[in-house]
Length: 546
Image (cartoon, rainbow, N blue to C red):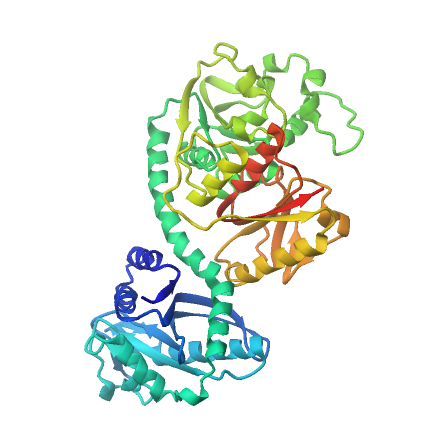
C-alpha cells in the first residue's frame, strides 16, 4: 500500500468536508491501486525557491512518487460536464476553470526547479505531469494540443493506475539506465521532512474546525440558557473567552456592557472581535484603574510604569463601597483567577440596579499570586452567584492535551479534543547553548515556513523569563523571520516573541517555548501549563537547563 502525506484518513475527511468529490475519488483509487513503491503527497501547498532563488507559490493536487522512476504532478478536476469551448475550460456552462494541463506543467517545473535549488543539479530521474477527470470521460479531439490524452486519467481508464502511471512515465522520457534511485529517495525524504507539517496543517484545520464548530454550538446554547449572574470555570481552551464574546455580541445596543481582564493583549484581541459597538467597554483592569485613579485621587506615580491597581486598597479607601461615575448593565470579568476579591467587589459596585456579572476563570492558570477563588465564599459578594463549568478542551489537539497533563499535572478534569494531532517535541540544552537552540528552532521554522508565509498558520515564541537567552544575546532574527513583541503583527516575515504572561489568554497554531524553569513548584507548573496550552496544533519546548 502506498504511503500518504498527510495520512489517508485525514486526506479523505478533508475532501469530504470540502465537498471535493473529484480528489476524493482519486484518493481512493490511489489508495486501492498503488503498492508500497509509491509515495503520495496530497494537496501539497508550496512556497518554494526556484533555481533563480525566487519564491514561487502554488498547490499541486497530488504529487505521486514512484521510488523506481520519479514523480508525477497530478492535477484533478471534478465535475461531470467539463468542457473546452471558445478557447477556454469550463466546469459547466457559465462556470470557468483554469487550464488543468497548464497547472500540471507549472507544478512539475516548480518541483523540478526546487530540486535544483536544493541539490544544485538537474534531477537524474523522470518528472512528469498528468491530469485527472475522475467524474467524466475526456475527449482529446475537442481541446488544445497541450491536452495530451496519454497523460489523462479519466472515468474510462482509471481502473489500473499503476499501468496508467507506467505509460505516463514512459511518455515523459523514463529510461531505467538514466534513473538515480538514491536521488529519488533523497528528494522524497527532503519533501517529507520539509512539507510534512505543512500538509498536516491543511489536514488538521478542517478536523479541528469541525470539532470547534460543534463545541461552539454547545457554547451558544450555554449563552442562552445559563443564568445571568455566575462564576463560570473551565480549563485552558474550554471556550471561556469565546463565551464572553458571544455574550457581548448578543447584548442589545440599549444596554451598557463592560469586559475586564488582566492582560492588555487579551483585551486588544477581544476589542478586534467586537467592532463598532459604542455601548461596550473593553479594557484590562490596569488601564481602567489608571484612568479611574487620575480622575479620582491625587497620586504621584513616580514614573509611568507604576501599576496603580496594586495600590488600589491603599490609595482609594473603601473603594468597594464607592459609587463610580460609570455604570453598566452587564459586566464580564475574564481570567478572574488573576483578580483579588476586592477588585471584583469594586467592579460589582459599577452595576446598575438589576445588573448582572459573569466571572470566568481557571485556578490552574493563576500566575500572579492573586487569590479570588481562595477568598471567595458565598455571601461575600453582593450578587448571589451560581456556578457553571466548561469541561471540553476545544483548543488543543488530544496529543497536546495529554502531554500537558502528563508534564504539569494540571488540566486533568477536561474532556480531550477529538482530533489526535501531532506529538509535542521536547529538546533539552545545557546553560549557555544559545547557538544550539537557535539552530534547532531554525530547523522547525524551515518545516513551517510555507504555512507561515502563506498565512495558513500562526506562530508565537514564548519564554518564561523576561531576561532570557535571546535578550541577553541580542537575538532579533531566526532564519528568515524577525522577532517582534507585537502579537498582532500581520507581517508574514515576523514572529511574535513574548513572555508567557504577556500571551496569557491567547492562542496560536504553533508554539515554540523557551522553558528555563524546572517544573517543580506549583508556580512553574502553572506557567508551563499556560505556555503549552496556547498551542492549537504544534508544541515545541526548548528546555534550557542550568
